[in-house]
Amino acid sequence: MSLRCLPRSALSVLSCRPARVVCHAANVRIVSRPLLSLPILPRPPAVLTSRFHSSQAAALHDVNRASGSAPLRTTIYFKIVDKVGSLDTVLSELRKLNVSLSRIESRPCRTKGFYDFFVDFGARDEAQIDNICEQLREVVLELQVVSSGSTDLVAMQTVPWFPRKKSDMDTFADKVMEYGEELDADHPGFKDPAYRERRAQITEIAKTYRYGSPLPHIEYTPQEIETWGIVYNQLTSLYKTHACREHRYVLPLLEHNCGYHPNNIPQLEDVSRFLKESTGWTLRPVMGLLSSRDFLNALAFRVFHSTQYIRHHSKPLYTPEPDVCHELLGHVPLYADPDFADFSQEIGLASLGASDEDIEKLATIYWFTVEFGLCRQGKEIKAYGAGLLSSFGELEYALSSKPQKVPFDPHKAANTTYPITEYQPLYFVAESFKDMKEQVREYALKYMRRPFVVRYNALTETVELLDTRDKVVRYANGIRGDLGRLVGAIEKLGA
Image (cartoon, rainbow, N blue to C red; front, side):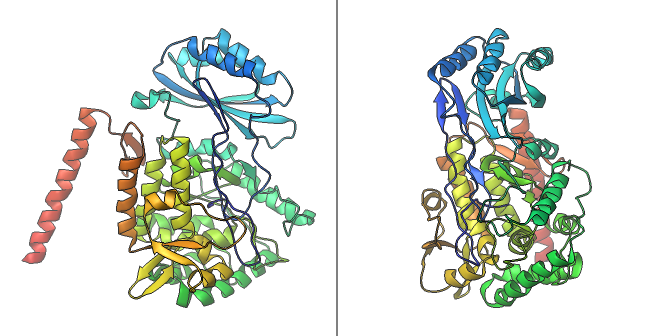
């Protein structure tokens, strides 16, 4: 997966500005989340602007005033029929139950004639959550509790829910903005029923994946392998002169350990195992387009969501979307580099609990770095962005004298617009991945208004809020221990 964009001319990919908040109703934010995914701009996600009226906004406000704060932050998913009055019925039921909503979000439903909703609210205890669910099941479809638990500072109504452990990402499986088999009319495979059926099979496999299970094994067809081989040979011929040294170093290791070859499409399980041993990163299959928030949140856990389907064979050198070629050739090699791995996680950590506006800015930083970033190596400039390393045309263009190139600055990048129907006129050039990590960390502390600090515990693979004295002291003691070992190592080297 990567930043969402429109298809350009052949052999390239483009971008689209992430979607913004579409409506406000009292203290409840009704949003369609920003999008993250590389080359494609499908039908716009469903928003509530045309369906929400002043009476509904007032109803939400009444619900919000009906009860005070609660110790449990809860997210519930449900489906309703797309007809006038459906949402009013749900809101009326919530008002009767004295539920205090902090957010209500719509998602396009895979089944036409229905809408998916995710709502956040505060609950007194588990008993109240059970009662709410029991009552709502009478008026909604497919209801389930996505998450609930003690929230500490996150209980503040202004902070969106975010995952605390890797298994929380199981909830993303049904929260995609668009599914992999949904093709636009200009997609090369739109009129190919066999290709569409194949895409549907692969996306359905991704939907059923859950944390801790073996990654799905896809038996690729000879035609799919032939398409991969064409792309593989074309791109690798350019890597020798255009790709950064880290990418060139890792690719042969992937060939040796994970089956990267023109005649073989690597399996996510093999690639994920290699990344885990290299930098602690893992892959996770995804059935379609994730929101920017969900996609970036996963990076905090060193998890990269990857598609498994491949572009249509009729145009092997063109794709209007991220496919397995983009993921495995563009993204994966850099996640095996320790410095790039740390930088990417820093973006993810900054996204946890961030506002919608900050998510949009982080997504833009991601776009100008992980997708379309350049770096200085010696006297030369090389490409490290996956959007470039999987795009023949733009890879050559980006390193030519045509576009403008400026030093990387996360604040400038976050506030820079970019075109959606042509190559980028501007690229940011990094001095090193280490520098980028520190710059993004400083940017988050200086410009983001998140009311807490998080850290990733690699031992438990969970995110911790540094919101109590005990947690901070424990964290400081761990750092002190690491410093002691560092001093010891320096002394031994000096001896």
